[in-house]
Image: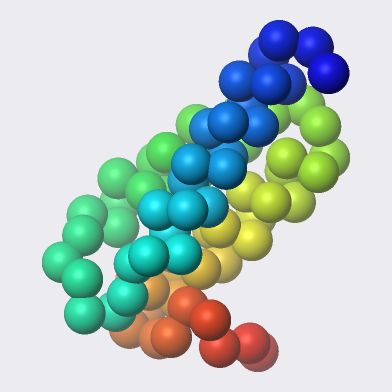
Length: 73
């Protein structure tokens, strides 16, 4: 894995941890997290990184919409 992929891996892992802790009841700036995800997507080159970022984006969208981010469908 090249150094940029290692950095991206760390960024995504951190974001996954943070987003897993968020709930609908939390007062967070959803737009900040949406911008953060989009910035990482713009830099990501590995398909697995893009897939993980998309999953994070889905969770954030569910939070923004007042839904349980862990619920499927």
